[in-house]
Length: 151
Ligand code: DQA
Image 1 (cartoon, rainbow, N blue to C red):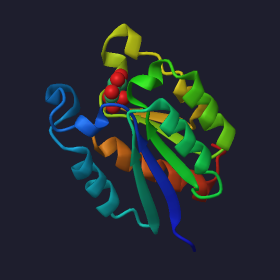
Image 2 (spheres, rainbow, N blue to C red):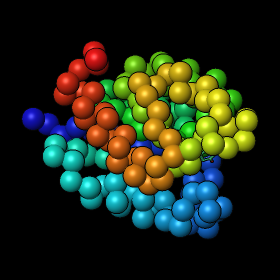
Image 3 (spheres, rainbow, N blue to C red):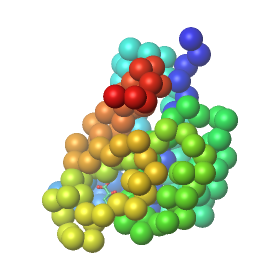
Image 4 (cartoon, helix red, strand yellow):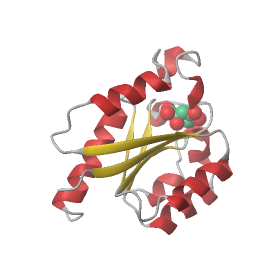
């Protein structure tokens, strides 16, 4: 079997992890998180690419370009989650199973963070488990691809 190719996209200000609001997002840098996610033993051969941008347009272009290249996308759209219809449309356009992840539990925070518009294009959302949410998301995509989408 070919390795399952997954793209992990992180949105604005996630390049500042490790410095930014550590009480909310933890003390790991994005690079440290990516290394943990890459080195985790999933039980299947996976190949994971990482992309981070503070720019909505770049995120949209990257999602568009992932068509035919990746079997799954994991995205933390950060603040864009709460209002970017354009990112939602990009996720829907490529038709690649996508999992949305948030480090913090968005339902335990300010009212304006409790709604994610981008999640409407995703197969599911993992929120509140810190860096481990990315590992859970990889497992969710592997399971979705291997077992199929019906449950
Ligand atoms: C976040 C939650 C968002 O509300 C916030 O704007 C972020 C990070 C999270 O991972 O918990 O930047 O997506």
